[in-house]
Length: 459
Image: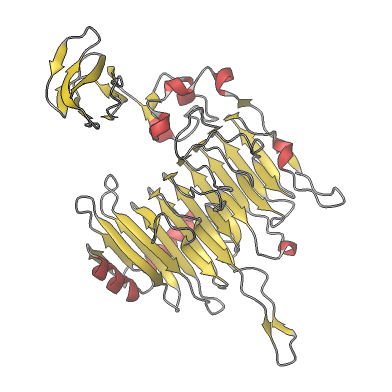
């Protein structure tokens, strides 16, 4: 399977086990853990969404027989929250894992902890035909979403290496698509990558994702632990992603010395910019250098129609050895834009500091991609026939207003809420002329024109 890398092949393999596989629907922690312990090749574990469902699953271990397993939420618009740590076990040669996650909000089993990975193959040899995250929200992974560390060599009676491990095995196909990844590692001691491979990949795909509020994340994709002499000529696709984060001290994509000279990096249609705001997860930290993009010893980079701002140039990512050897075999990065060159700014997004990067369809970002489509995550493009804007100004008493701003189709229903603050309670909503519009809180109305409100309070 080392060279069988297309999604078509992965899909065909899924059909081969479909007849005998089962789909178990669960709602509670006990149902989840019972179903997990009974997983067999091709099985699906479906979590029923039930109004803010949060399942703290603790630590579970994958079946020792290997197999492909599907974990999904029923509704792509309502993601059940799963707090979990999934461990692997070493597999016999020729046996593989496949893990597919869809429509889930994933967190580490101890959110807010000081260490831990959502999926952890610690000193495990277990090849994977697929590792896929689709339409998932991922928060508080603490360290990494996926991390693998190769086993120690096995020694004979004389103390010599009888089995030498050069990696954790292969990952034939990795995909993260249509995901929101934010509020992950958030303490200065946890500078970890989101995806941390001790495996050797064949094909890696990041498409249509949004990454934000990650001040201490080391990189989005890093390799380590494997034997660099293996030199896998993998294909890395990073396309139509929106990335606003302040760190990436190890580089945005960082396979280092673990890929071969002809490894291919296709980096197209991405919005990769440092945020211009400060909050608890986007720190205005001036102590680090501007991040690098691709950090690798070798490779061929094709990068088209990206908006990149606040990062070092592409050559800064060349990982040279002590003799100065090692360079990208090819580097094709034209055209490339800054936000100013494309005529856009953070003001074009609805509320980026709160994770809302939506913008109107007539913005240059919507059509500046290499295929005439969007730059960045395409889900943020708002295609309205008759758009109306809403904005709520902060009150002097600092009430928290939700939402603060937004764009809606004319005739849509909008509901806005103001919180009470110490010493004050809500009184009314006023417009820009000082007229009282409503005393209801929350206030729900049909928007047919641009609206600007602010809450008044009484003590």
